Amino acid sequence: FDNDPEKVPSLALTVGVGTVMAAREVMILCNGHNKARALQAAIEGPVTQAWTISALQTHPCGIIVCDDAATDELKVSTYRYFKDIEKNNL
Image 1 (cartoon, rainbow, N blue to C red):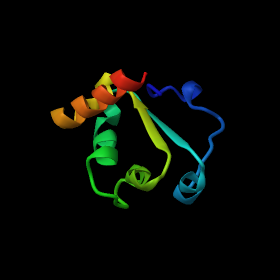
Image 2: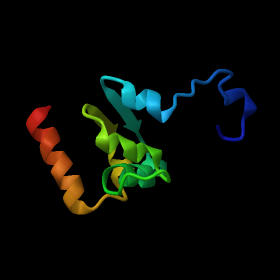
Image 3: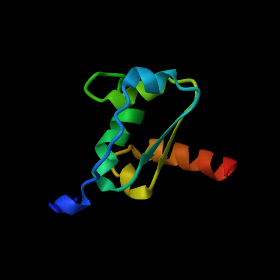
C-alpha cells in the first residue's frame, strides 16, 4: 500500500484452505511480477504446505487467471501449453 496507512483496507476476509477446497468452483487471480513465484509454485511445484495455493492442483474445478508478468517464473513449455489452451478456448 505504498507505506500509506490511508490505503490499507479497514476490512478483510480470511478464508481457510478447507473452505476454498470445499467450493464447487475456485478462481484465483494473479497479476504482476510479484506473484510470479506463487504462480510457479501453484502450477509447476508439488502440492505442499509451503505454498498453500498448490492445493488448487487437486481441486476438480479450479482456474487461475493471470497476466503475462505473473508468468515470469514459469517454464517456457508450461507458458506455451496454457497459451494454446487460451487460444483454443477463448
